[in-house]
Length: 110
Image 1 (cartoon, helix red, strand yellow):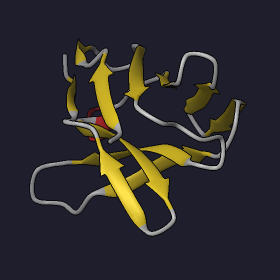
Image 2: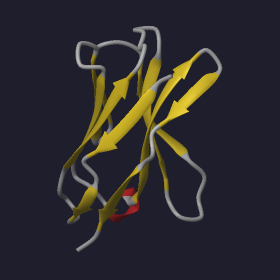
Image 3: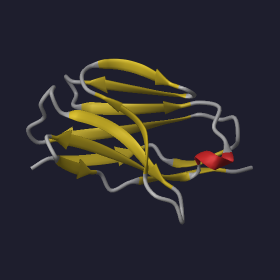
């Protein structure tokens, strides 16, 4: 099976930065689509960014990157705002099946 373990969440002041990490274990393929979602209280889970293969991609204030050698996906979050407060989930999609991490809390508050 695939296991996704997230880390890096915490409390940060508005305008600050956080770097989330998602370490994937098991049989990981480059064709697997990995990404980050977030869910705030009372709201549906929403997509933050996805990445198919290695490299990085800028998505607004966030940058998603994937290190295939380490089977790790990162989410660099800059210029954080209070509305970014949510539980952030790492995901891996293989076909129609989606694996989820346990989520890590990100709180942006002064």
